[in-house]
Image (tube, rainbow, N blue to C red; front, top):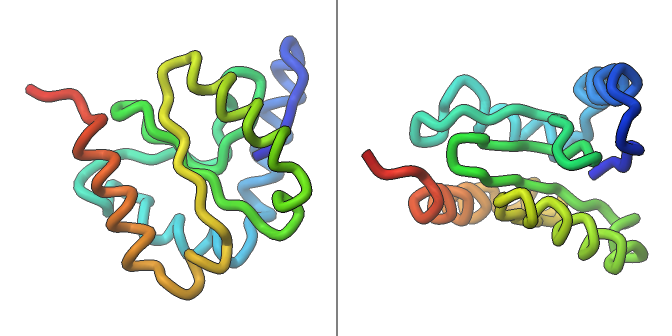
Length: 124
């Protein structure tokens, strides 16, 4: 997840656009499974600004965020916790997966996301 200072509207949008073009292998693979309502008909957005942060993937309908973490996040656990808490105050649930999980056990990652969607999605 990338940090952007509040009030930097245009810079935030430009930064999010740049991140969409510079996705990691894990992000590309997961995006191929989430895009075009491929996962249970839910719409996901990638590199979306929320609460002053740019999140990897967001399903606004279910208020669900999916974050992929690489090795650098091992050293930033406290910062990630604070970001998760800040985004949670806006009503979002944040799911975190390691990049290697997406690359080696995609079915399990997708099942975890499906389960969260089932719990979070608004009922008709």
